[in-house]
Length: 285
Image (cartoon, rainbow, N blue to C red; front, side):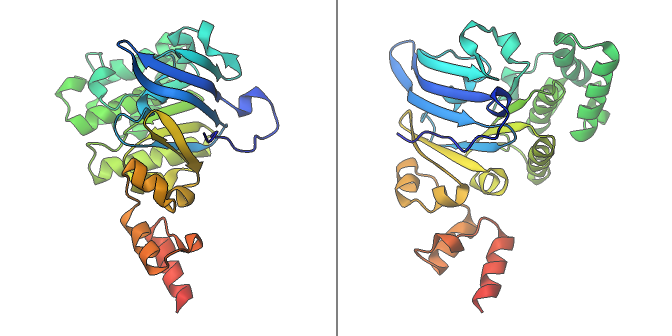
C-alpha cells in the first residue's frame, strides 16, 4: 500500500512531528477500522485526509493525541514513541478539534473554555491572558466571552472549539470536518486559520469531505478506503486519479471537474481554483 511520505528536511525529529508505522486499529467487537497504515507527516505541511464515512479517517487522526491507541504498530510523536505518553502529554504537541464541538466543550463561559487549555499546560497567568486574547480576537469571539458556549449557535460553538485548541499553541493542529455546519463567513475563517498556522510553521491535518477546501489549502491528500490508505499525492494528482475518485465516491471541486472535461487526459490543465481556470482559459486562446 502507499506510504504517505515526502522528502524530509534536515534537522531531525522535529521535522517529522508524526510518524505512523504499520498501525492497525480494531474496535471492541472485532471491527477493523485501520489496517497496516504507514504515514509520515512533516513540519509545516498541511495534510488532508479524505474518504467516505467509515473509511478510517477519524480513527487515524484520533491516534495522534492519544484519544485512540493502536491495536498493533507504532506511533512516533515529535520523535518519541507515543505508547508510554498519556493524553495530556500528547496534547501539548497535537491539538485535536472535534467535528462535534459538544464532544469537546464543557466550560460555563467562552472565556473559561479558552482559558482552560493553556492553564492546564501550567503557563503563567499573564501568558494565559495573552493567548486567550489572541484567540478571541482571531476567531472574533470578544463579544461572546461571557456567554455560555451551549447558548451559541452550532457554527459559533465550533469556532469556540477551534479557538480553545489554538490558545494552547500546539505544534500540530488536527481539524476534523472544520467547515461542516459553517456558513460562508465561518468557512472563510477556517481558511484564514489554516493560512495563519502555515505562516507560523505549524503542521495542520484536516479531515474533510469539503473538496474545495482541500484543493485550496492542502499540500498533500491521503485517501482512505475500507480502512486502508489507497493513494497519496498532491490534490491535483488525487483528483486526476479516476480509480481513487470512484472507489472513495468523492467528487473533485466543480471547477476541477470543468477543466477535466475541457482538457481530458491532461492533468497539467487540472485547475484547483477559479483563478487557475481563468489563467488556463486565457493561455488557451
